[in-house]
Image (cartoon, rainbow, N blue to C red):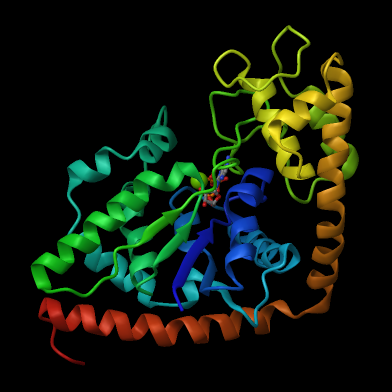
Length: 327
Ligand code: ATP
Ligand code: MG
């Protein structure tokens, strides 16, 4: 069975972008693949996090994995920090990564722009992400479009290790959905929707109350026209909202266009908000049940145990090939 690995950072509240670009695909892949889905807490601390908020967000994301339909019988669900092999392989791969490669990463450029002090962790983050994937010899990595460049680096590092120390790592493939790979911000369509955006109006959080969702959609920026037409070049805001509508309703883009022909943005936005509420309300209900059930701790423990067995073995092989003495 092919292996799948992915993760989401507990750096804020999960957004509709995370749901469409990542979570939905996790659920799809679990039936046919050996899956490892982590909450990547070691990545979240590459920008400052309040300890209490980090704890809460970590639990919230793990519970949302379950609420979205990831089944711990099928997939390992766990905290990245509970599987020590990630940090260990992360360091080993950092020593194979060049500064130039890291400097080219657009996520680093975006996240460090305008900051007075930038943590070194943010810079070396892609090496740790490579370790996350390679430590299971994963075949497939379901991610949004923004992670494509990091995945390219992962493939390069795997190839570099293989040519230096002998064939060992599987070269992983990205699994990026055709539509929904990059959901844009509601307030600024030039930026992707991100959970760490300080403006909550820029994203729909999966746990937003229905009325909050309605308000955020009604305030989402649009152009000054009134036509519901998919055209990323000349109507990027409306196209972004149409993409969300399509993914939430199951209608194709031409079907969405036909449905709202002759109507303005008002009726379209009203219905869009209802489609999102229809999807998120049952998910929120399951989320509340999971949080109050107390089941999370056991799920995370079992997931980490299962993942550690595989990851420890892979790291041991890496160390041996690199010339480390056996402990
Ligand atoms: P942060 O702002 O802290 O980086 P984020 O919203 O980018 O948060 P991540 O934890 O970095 O979320 O990414 C988790 C997964 O969600 C990744 O696979 C990423 O590609 C995907 N993803 C993130 N944002 C979007 C988006 N706007 N559209 C589609 N997929 C997305
Ligand atoms: Mg991100």
